[in-house]
Length: 401
Image (tube, rainbow, N blue to C red; front, side, top):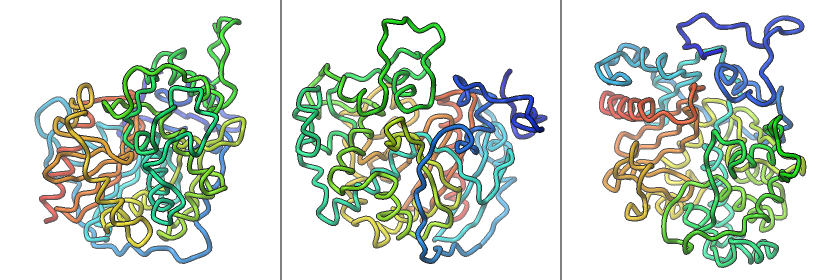
């Protein structure tokens, strides 16, 4: 079954009692199932709450503008409207904040303001924000060795790596991020995290990791010196999350709740998916509402907002383009990566949190703007969708200036 745009008829996934179309256990994150599952993770996988706390909700005043007809570049060439681009790129929720006010908010595909949406690798940026808060309190030293926090990793390729290498994805640890190969390191992480069962045709002699930490302990090959090159490897954020737990003496969902979600005034509690050992998936298992992703972006726009140290935000905006090469330059030709955020270019120093299948938080200080796009693309990666969206964000920013 192929996927469907918001303007197409919706198949009755998980409708009826009992439902006739149920996402397959091995393919719930693939099209068309992801159009339902990304908003309903708690019906598919075990999760741990990220409590919003019992404090007040940060108000987001409204100063709405009708941007539906704003002309932007279409995917693959030509021109279209913003509404058309959102349809073409399988959008579930889209939010624009200007000067801390909601100017544009749209929901599609059954999503609503209280819906929690899987953000994939935006979770890395959430985890890093909490790491920044811990560092600001002196509980975490990003210049310390990984083995200072997790001595068990002395027997792995992480020996000699620092926490900053994890945050910048510059360790030299070999990790195959191929999403479509179930036997790649990333495919094994899906099994370790409890997201997928082992493939039905698995060789009985192949040993699948029982949980994420067990997989980390098996990473023994160093392919380059630590700090030499940026290479996107999701496992880095998992190692960071375990270091944070050792430093704080708490599990990651509690850390994010206490250090980020409650103090920023989240509207809804969020959640992480958890593996068989109860460990939160730091690199991609975070779920939250559209507006709360926007509030996270505002923390960075407001130089930490009293929650994350301003020095952490400034450091996040300064990456090393010299170690940032293909294939990452396809969508960010002058980009860099720092503290689990993507940097647009060295001039604007705007930043993105990005996740596969079309998740994005964009923070641009020149425009005083935060934008959030939650999607369920048919593909893990789609450069055309990503570039068209990035161009549209600049059109919006200039239009609102």
